[in-house]
Amino acid sequence: MASPKSEQIRRGTVAELIAAAHFTSAGNVVSIPMDHANPYDLIIDSPTEGLKKIQVKRAFWNKEYNSSYRVDIGGGYGDDRFFDYLVCVVLEENKIYIIPWESMKHVGSKLGLYINGKYPIPHQVKNNFEQYMYELSTD
Image (cartoon, rainbow, N blue to C red; front, top):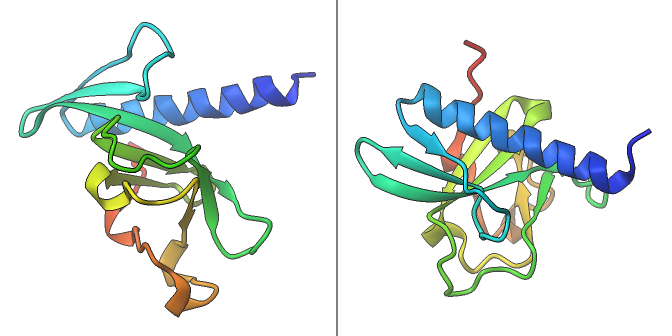
């Protein structure tokens, strides 16, 4: 039986592979850094945007509020630009979020993803990331 930490690493690896497949199917060249000391997981070479650093996170159901998926992003990023896009994979909903750094740089340590506008208290939602949501391709 796998330890909780190894299971967490496996889920993260699956999310990275899904993100890499998504970018590859969109016509990008995807590279993976040789070590995990970087604050990003993938580098894409986009025909339209050039080289971009991608941080990938696996979203999980937020049991505390039972209304959204949550992504733990550590201590927040502030003004330090560590990557160009944060990619959140929501396997249970077959969705991927590709969020530009500028749109989430002042988010705290947890990011809430509300699928199909299911906000627990709509006026308290500070960040609506639905505009960055895509269906995962099954092709």
